[in-house]
Image 1 (tube, rainbow, N blue to C red):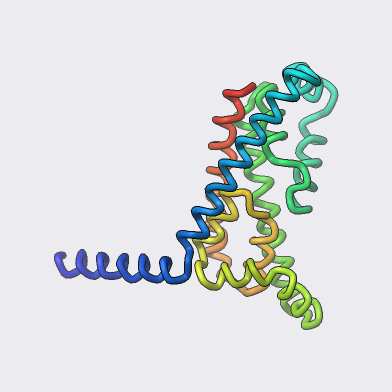
Image 2: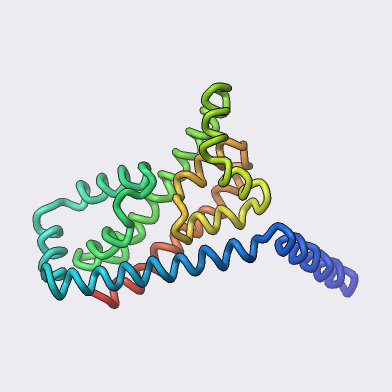
Length: 204
């Protein structure tokens, strides 16, 4: 038992040293700073919108009454696949005015998770096309480099933080990252939506 504990401690020390050498901690600090900054900007934008332009409660109530959940989920799905053209927080805010907000947050997370899987398999398919593979590897080289260095932790960062999640998923398929581990680490996408919902629901 003691030997096993010592082995685990040694493994943790080695991992810690590796992540310091590869600057993973610096990367996470930078992303965390950007996350706080983006969340702050979203809150300020919401407050400015609500105070100077339009009553946001009326706006989201109007969306609920005029647009069906199916349409909103379709727009969200398309947006997620196209690198999050519309911030997910907008759709989370919309769910706060629906009859079952937490269920709808769960559905948003599920759709986002599904988009990631589709992007992953798109990456695997493109991996078979040599010309496309070379082109994409140049375009997503920073994601490829990070994923090869940090593996699952980078997928968690993509799932939780303001990194293009579909691009991280595409890169995972492109480098043939093991699907079992990809699916596991991507589950943090659900946590991201529920945590952000806790913040957004308090604002609205």
